[in-house]
Image 1 (cartoon, helix red, strand yellow):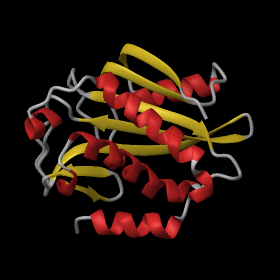
Image 2 (tube, helix red, strand yellow; image 1 turned 180 degrees about the vertical axis):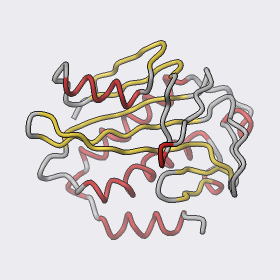
Image 3 (cartoon, one colour; image 1 turned 180 degrees about the horizontal axis):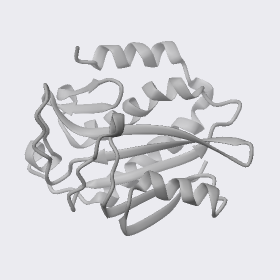
Image 4 (cartoon, one colour; image 1 turned 45 degrees about the vertical axis):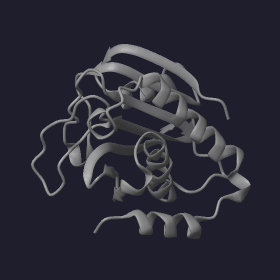
Length: 194
């Protein structure tokens, strides 16, 4: 599986663009990312604050018969993305808050939003990914937010994170024969904050 990359300056949301690429342009496997988005979506219809300098992206692919089912991707996706975050931040301080938050030092650094669409009798999975790289919104809930710059004192380029996300997904599909849901679930549980 090879992801085609689509880069934009400004979109409503990268998931919207992914849906359009699948339905209108018949694209099957890709990664969309943008400098800014005007209607970024979080879970439960919440807005995703999209400050320039952070990562807003979506990857998409068809759910083939030999792939894990949709519900298992709700564990696969946060684990793949948390491994990407671990690459840039201190490994021992990266945790998950299900269904879709990645935390560093108990603060939200990334959100993952997955949705499916049907196009041409095929089901596609779209995974929206937002990573706070240089700034974060001031959110008032049980977990504060943070960003990679604050946690590591390193200013990363969006493209280097996108490249690692894409190569992580490509590796996942190359190694699909090794996939074991029970092992992945255990790993996720060990990283989850209650």
